[in-house]
Image (cartoon, rainbow, N blue to C red):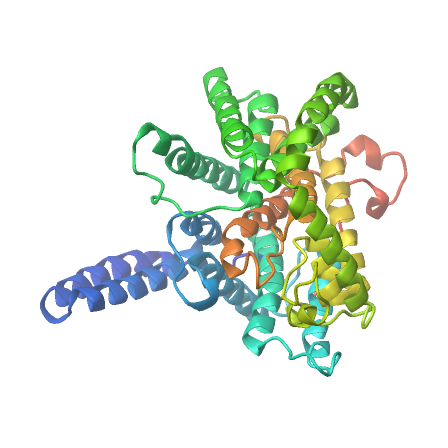
Length: 477
């Protein structure tokens, strides 16, 4: 058996389906007579959850697809923004880790290069939770343990979503299904929340609010498939191009003030074109320069206060970070320290609105170094895969994931969109941020499928396999 691989039992296929059907009929019939409507909904939700877990044991990608899409529809289900996406990823991650323990001692799959810095980052984050219990500032209270654990859970489950996609999506068809399902439901979300309401249709509540990472993934994946997937029928490629145009029109012209949405999305498109051909970007230079010249006054005018307060907040946080620059102050603690450092004359709590600053403040410079290492390895992996995977969906996916990586890196400068801060975007933001981690994990999935293996002529040159582009480190159990 292999590491990070589904250990499904073949015999389960024979009895699981009739058992599920029989159980559903019995429970449904019983609830009709003995339960109130609220109790019936609760029991059916529980039964659906159990059924999803059983299905996920046999088909892990099904659980990932359900987790990604459910958050776009199902509202918050618990305190502090607890949501179905966070719960489902936690359950899927727990089941997967349990399978790894059960399969201990069996041959194991290779660990891709980006996995190492990500695991180290999770370790540093766990250490930061303990560091956060130290009395860094005597006159300031600590963040409640619930908030600190919430901050750590976002890091752990973000890494978990990445690893689940990387090592439980073993076939290209499942990666394709996950991508197309997201593009379909994501398009419906944009239409229902942004396009149809101005026409007088009350559809804005059909889907949940989304963050910057959702838009980055939607634009990047749709654009790359439209431009580079020549296996698609031309009609569908035009449809995907229309999705990109409609999404950008809504964000740039109807929601111009939400710059943390359309700036990262546009950055992802520029990155996709640049990764394919730097000459194409040269053509865009005059267009980008003209756009910046025309839009800069509006941006500065509408966001002058926000820009000034952010710079002042970062200067104050730099003073707080000096207290513990190596391992940080722990999760959410700096939010409780900020009232001791008045901003523009006000002694209030505030956050940085910047993921990079948050990482340093919570996990220190070591945490930021690990995260930067992860971004570098992801870019390196995608760069190596872009011309090695087969043309069509797989190659277009690589370009889309690279574009999403750049878009996410830009979004981190504009807010806590990739690793939501507990007291700002919060746990609810995981519904959107999880998508970026999921599709980045798809790059490792492509590598693990062997689609990015070095061609025979490269190996014939005499370089050892571990030095070939796209190589992975093999770890045996």
